[in-house]
Length: 277
Length: 88
Image 1 (cartoon, rainbow over the protein chains, first blue to last red):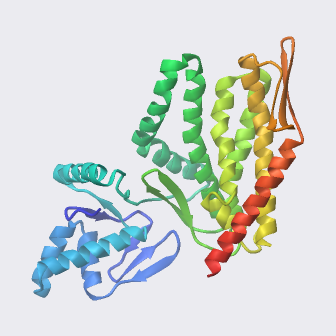
Image 2 (image 1 turned 45 degrees about the vertical axis):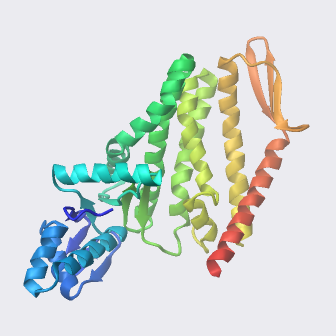
Image 3 (image 1 turned 90 degrees about the vertical axis):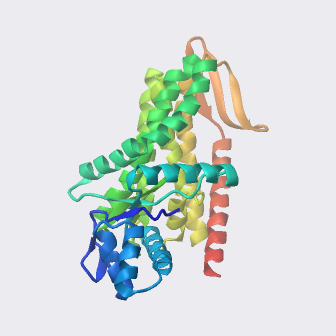
């Protein structure tokens, strides 16, 4: 859902230089022509979709409704291509968005399609990469985690309070496992010389990297890192009989299932030809 | 090739998860004071629990291998089907 009050935000690894959008992470350039170039210039300058459409309609003496429609479509395509982030501007737009989501829930009985948001991943080793991924998964996704973990922990606290520490540890392990999984992909992609960035859409979070013929290790690295950490955690929990440590390690081990065709990583891994695995 | 590769990956993945579960069952069984028992498919044992006094042990059975091979084959078939669907 795009609101006319939305503004475009260029991620730090995407640059607009007047006649093309440059994806610095993947090393791709997307040339723009004519009205697309003019529209992008206004949107990149901080205009909302509505204001940019008005300006273009006056400049080219065309129907404002048509320009508004075309510009909204253009912004939607750029967002889907993970080249820009759309953000609502002002409290009215936020309120409208909340109402739209509520209406969608009432009418369609499901969540509306979540917006795609791209985050640049920094250069310079595994630690800055992990820090950035942790800030997205752990902090920006915190409301979602709190909602999920709260609904899991509340019944446990009511009916089996003795298991509450173990379940709380499992919740922490779940968030940490997602960070380790995506961190594994990002570090492996960088080591393979492939640019990458992080994308989030609602619950879904993924590292996007350049497709190449030798990316087997990149696809496998996320689940493998989690599997190793999970096995180490369980092996450590076993002699000391620590239930919280064992439960914290469980989500890491479950991530190994991503190596099967049930998950995108496993499907890519199975389809990979040659490669380094 | 896709079938073999995916079968091998699937079987190994499940085998590792099953080994990891031994540790988990050991911790849970010890803390929850489980007695003797068996987890399996019919007569085929996957895990066998045994308690003698204060000590608790978990052993794997032949079922672990059977499950790993079965899941591996399913993974291989799934990968082959996905590959054929993608080619069409």
